[in-house]
Image 1 (cartoon, helix red, strand yellow):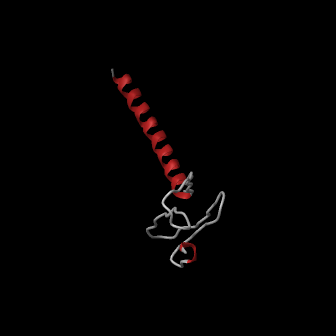
Image 2 (image 1 turned 90 degrees about the horizontal axis):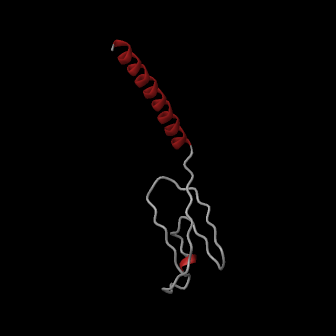
Image 3 (image 1 turned 45 degrees about the vertical axis):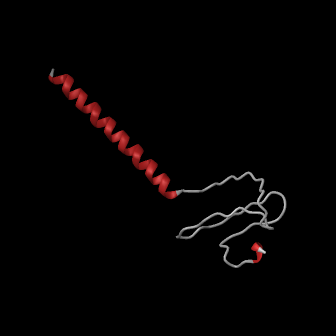
Length: 85
């Protein structure tokens, strides 16, 4: 019985809709989707969601600030070039 095995990091099983909320730790993982009786035919729809909060927010703010700085510098350079001509 695959469900009874102890090597699973997280698991959800049963009939009907299943949801698995899992807090990953550092490491490599594989996802196994299978019938409990190990039969070959499997009918499923999978939705995978991941939450990446702090790093993406910091990256977005940094890119936005960098873009604003580049816009200001380029505007200043165009202004100086027009004044000299």
